[in-house]
Image (tube, rainbow, N blue to C red; front, side, top):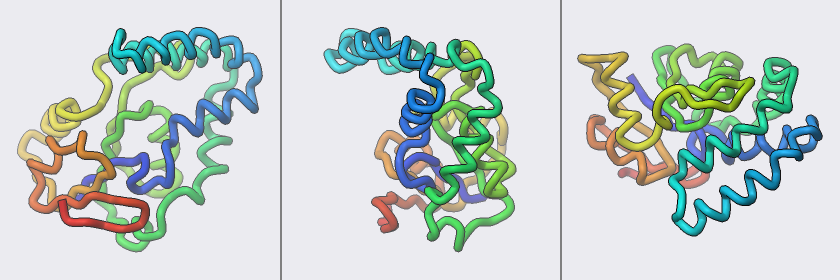
Length: 184
């Protein structure tokens, strides 16, 4: 099985950041969340609050979106051109995506490009509330073994050293820098 991070790995850019900007422009009521996001962003930048607290406050904007399923589908459909060609050329039926982005967003992308198996942060698309931990770092490994107790990762691809825990349990690991694949 090959395992892939999503954002900045097989997807050009950060899908969550893009989705937030998309919501601001296509669902203007979400702009009501900007003061909350700015304040918690400042606190996160100053290392007063952890990243998860910032993300929880950022995702609060979802309460202002009454048609989240529709807007998610619109966004992912309009951003399929962000899937990198090198991934399309090597895609296999048993690929697994593990991402820190919200699962409802990653799932929409994955279904559209033919990836059946994915794991991501469980975030309620209507309230922005997390169910569990952010799927990041060691949490990705925990979730992998929870689903695949005897699972083996053949090749692993990520743009970030924060994914070192997954790289360490893989037979082969690759860092992705743009469209360049570099041996981990």
